[in-house]
Length: 141
Image 1 (cartoon, rainbow, N blue to C red):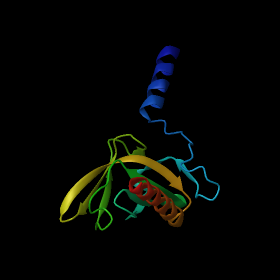
Image 2: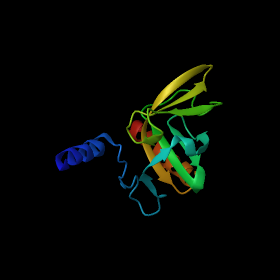
Image 3: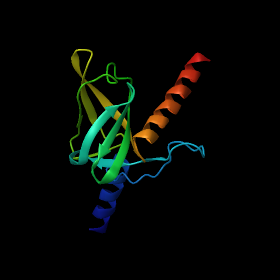
Image 4: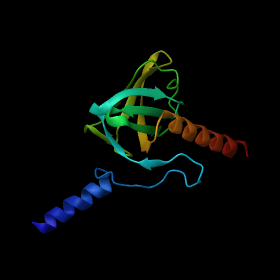
């Protein structure tokens, strides 16, 4: 029985269902704090697309998250409605969860690559600005 329990624990850890990572997203001292996290879809109060690759999520109990999409999602920034879908109620980094949104006159889906807990919307916005500036400077070189 202990062998089955250990195997199940290892399987959950490797598939990301445990979602216990506390890896910091940005190591600079002046950067907002962001830690990998998970959230329950039922706790979501609102969404706000901050960029075509980043979505801020506000949840119950004063919890806030920044979602990073796997790729650029055309029209996400100006979308009218966003929904999160997953086979489970819990959404974690790289677990196959997606967002569905209406952008550029069509319904589109994007895969959620990373889920990070943030202090508030302002912290999420600052992280997005830092990350998009870093990407812009990388592509201009």
